[in-house]
Length: 197
Image (cartoon, rainbow, N blue to C red; front, side, top):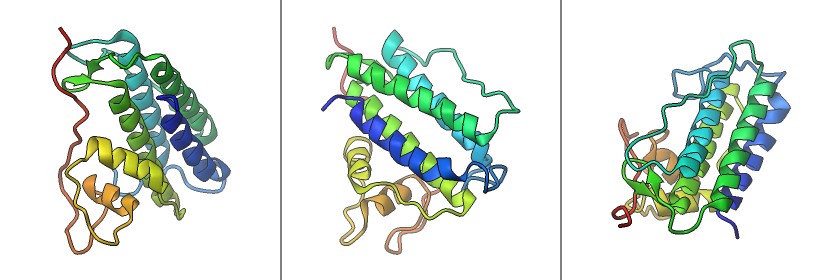
């Protein structure tokens, strides 16, 4: 299995859920609990995926690259999803090309599996946000949620009977979990160890 395969799988799940609804739903509605619209959340997702690909390609050790992806304001939902597709595939390709020893900055040294998990997390979470804003019933796939929880949230609660998607949504402030209140702040840990000598 290549490093980029999980990102491709998450991207395909996202596109299957959202692409059929680019014309029949209001993409100007807020995306779930976010302040962004569904359309702007999709553009943000594309930005994140491209940023991770850039980090892998440039391999900076002290900061994120000074770049931002701008999707033109008049771009409709279908074309925004095309940009998401391009950015996701660029990240998957960069992951496939990355040697195991590669480290690039994400609040410390991050390895290719860390960037893969972050790309999957961004895709799942923002697809959930958009789907909620569009009124679509969608849950992130179990296996991808487990991958993200194992890599980015190793101290996530082990709730008996809780679906991995519900744990991931709780970890990221998007839901309650077996009586645990919604988190008001959160972060994930992608950095590993120290920079190689």
